[in-house]
Length: 449
Image (cartoon, rainbow, N blue to C red; front, side, top):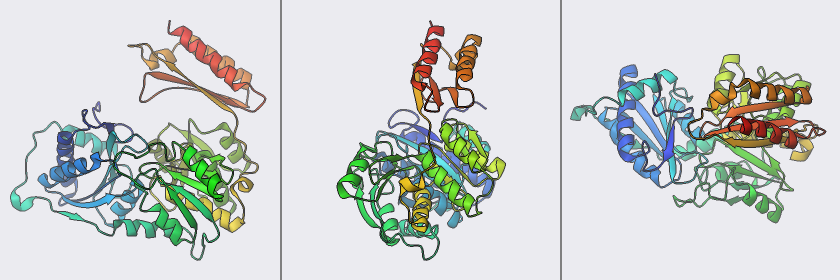
């Protein structure tokens, strides 16, 4: 079926514009409840949210729709997305619902579902929910209505889980850390995790007011963290996004440590200790240097389409446990079922403690190659797929690939959210990737005229 609402990561958009409206969320809760009840009988669903102001409205609407369908609801309040996945599993709930638009500004919001196993809801179930949205809303008999409760210790349970992913007796004592919680869902979680593990913690971006989530803070705006680390003389900084499933770091000099760096450190550590199951999944945007570095270590590497959903699908297909994106979505499958910023960064800090080494020392030998990206905007009515299929464009790509040899790569891909073709070239330092990228982008532009 052709989907109207669900994308690769749930349903997302601007608050007040269809489908991100209160009436749609009421119907969505009801439709999801109907589908889940048919699959499982009496059903319980957990609902968590980030800190944006519209979360209150959508939480109430979803609760009402689920109750009307005869589904019991447990409310978690503000909770990182991976925390909702974890609690869905441990409470033996039938599904979990996340109200969040991740790293987007406060006036966006979205919904995504977790299965009872704490993983993305199967496509078939999402399709059935979409189909049910076309049915008229009905209300269960009064005696069959769903009940709503609040889980008061949800934050504490997730904090203890995060701490448990560090080996026993391993302490962060002696580490001076700055946390940037993006005024988002980690604001009351992350500081407690790191303090209770022994780190000296300073915090920015932990005063949510419903409107400031991701505003000039967090993993998509690292300048604030960089400045705080340098000002306070900290050992490192850690920035999460609004819902806590992304993370990036900065070292003591303010240099950014992105998802590729984090993925390399975790992969190398687990490989050297004989714990890595299989290889590593990255994406089409993962740096060429990551693939080269892992190959040198004898670690298999595969690229999935951009999006943590596709990363996890490829991990599952290969029965591998580690994958992630340069943006900071890191899936540590040996301890968590989805991308988890806190859990991922704890793996890196554990490595620092074991090796008694700084981030720059641990990253010696890992060289990311220069990368250039140019976005080419498509004229109205032009389909990216048609442009990508042009033989003249394929010839232009081949010309650049010949110049790169085995020292780089070319990537052309349509944007999933805008009428753009993204042109990227990356290659070893002696190659002029800026010139090659612009030249290829000019060829694309010329074909549009």
